[in-house]
Image (cartoon, rainbow over all chains, first blue to last red; front, top):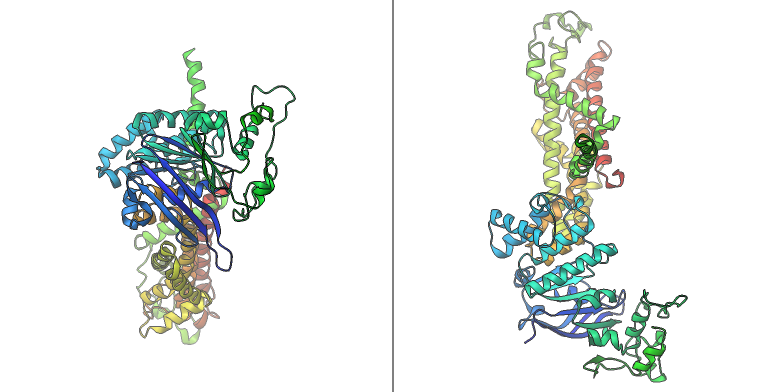
Amino acid sequence: MALLEVRDLTVDFVRRGERPFTAVDKVSFDVEPGQTVGLVGESGCGKSVTSLAIMRLLARRGNKVSGSVRFEGTDLLTLSDRDMRDRRGRDLGMVFQDPLSSLNPVIPIGLQITEVLERHRGMSRKAASVEATDLLDKVGIPDPARRLSEYPHQLSGGMRQRALIAIALACRPRLLIADEPTTALDVTIQAQILALLRELVQDTGTALIMITHDLGVVAGLCDEVNVLYGGKIVERAERHQLFGEPRHPYTHGLLASIPRLDAGRGEKLVPIRGSVADNIPWDGGCAFAPRCPNALPVCREVSPQLVPDHGGLLRCHNPVRPAVVAGGGAR
Amino acid sequence: MNTLLNKKKEPIDKLAAASGRSLGGEALRRMLRSPVAITGGAITGLFLLLAIFAPLLAPKDPLDRTLQDQVQLGRGIIPGSMPGYPLGVDDFGRDFLSRLIVGAQQTLLVGVLATVIGVLIGVLIGGIAGAFGGWVDTVLMRLVDVMLSFPSLLLAISIAALFANPSQWTVILAVSMVGVPIFARLLRGSMLVQRDADHVLAATSLGVKRGAIVFRHMLPNSLGPVIVQATLTLATSILEAAALSFLGLGDPDPSRAEWGLMLGKASRQFLDIRPELAYYPAIAIIIVALGFTLLGESLREALDPKNRR
């Protein structure tokens, strides 16, 4: 049994007097214990909403969540609020994008760690304090005992994200969701944080859902990758498969638009045409069709289904063939 | 070589120390550089010392009517300044300076208590509205709107007039009610911002209980504006308490030295004989209100993150 089984997870944004907007559309995926799964896509594709829906952190007002999220067999979506609160932080942890705004500015870092330890592991203030020092040390924060009494604004960006990771992992959750954990950091720090995450995940056997728009992050970290577009999974593949042989034109476009150090002089980046429309309709054909270089007439009429393909899944009428990759703009 | 290293190390340590200040320390540092803050702080500090040590500082017993036989109000005679009585005496022949000094204590008591009660009730209402939201918020905020729709002094007068037996406690209560809707609205507003703050979402994602979220994560981050407003409200509370006494809605006990009461009596009964007896309490009220206002304004400025340097 998978650690986490997400089935047909759907999130509708419901506003009075407006047509509901489907932000996440029947998304299904599994996470095995210790596995790292990527959710990739550009802004507005529904990747963050998916993670918030799994954690049940979406406001009840204005959001309709359906489907099921089974964690070790229990459907999180039907749990009582109290039971869900007990699980958050203990079984499932989360790391957010902006480390400064995700820490409480008026209380010291130490207290923000011990709070969780006292809550879920029933530790005394003193024992929690010792454990917190240990945790900060583990995430590579120098002089951890002194840092405990410092406030978030006194730490650097990288330190803050390390502290946040320490807090999220304090109770040794079996699943960690990282929502763009490196986006707000500069590049050298990004690499450090990713290395730290990889190391912690390996050491503790924590499963990780990595949410990102950055395929470089995916390449270094994920076992399996789900590419989202317009709230739906358009391609799922094992990491090497995805990078070696992207099948969906969208995935292909994402890869082709990454600047490469080994590119020849004068070679241009290949962008994906257009941008994500506000409300992408999947009912009248493929949502990516207007931007797709491979679009056929059928793409604008029949919405493609997610079907098995090369050991993964693919939602496309006219996938990219390996030969096209080689001949396309990517190389 | 060693000394050179040490010399280089010093400014770095200083830098580290400067960046290692808490938000409060940072604000304090900024206030100490502002002349407005220093003026306000000095006035407020002197006033506090005067009020606290009033019984020791007053040269005479403020209730002692030793010079009453020299006062002939009917014939328009109140003795003015004389040795031992630098500000003269009031209509009962009591030392005016001593009464002013003792009056500071009364003023401080009324101002602080009224503000504290106003903050407590306002924070309670605003906190509940901001923490729960929904219909609780709607109902409470409409009540607050009703209170806000009265001009503040009119509200205080109406509440004070409700009581059959006016005393200093009815004054305190009436004045505190003026602050309640302001504090409630302020706190509710910043609590609503905090509800959607990332760190509150992060705390929720860690399974922190609702009570802890409200009291540890939302409330402390929302109190800044309330604290600033409380300093400013101290000034208006003092003014309003004085106004109520001036209008005769305060404590009717004539033995109590209260600036508003002293001002009211002097301006109604013997302004033509000894106008300075009206000026002294009026000036005292103005200076103290000014001190608290300056302090509050500079506090607001110092705590404003936009002014961080």
